[in-house]
Image (cartoon, rainbow, N blue to C red; front, side, top):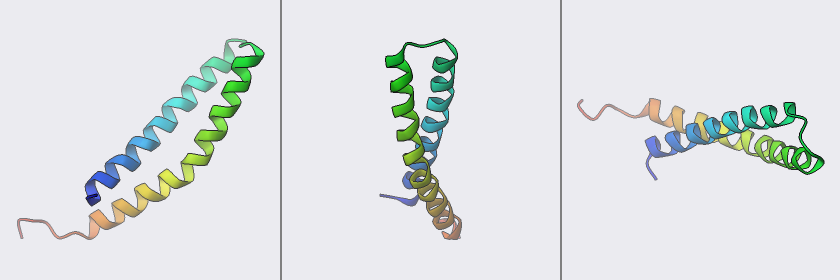
Length: 73
């Protein structure tokens, strides 16, 4: 997998997590049923677990990309 692809994947994961947080918060404000509230808790836990890994992958890929020499030189 190329460095740029890893960076794009890491940023995509971080974007997905941010969007999911907004959707989960909106669902919680709607006085959701117990089942939806439980599901929101599960999703929040899942996204929290993914966050550190996605952030580390994005930072690592960005650092590697920054060290690459431009192809035109």
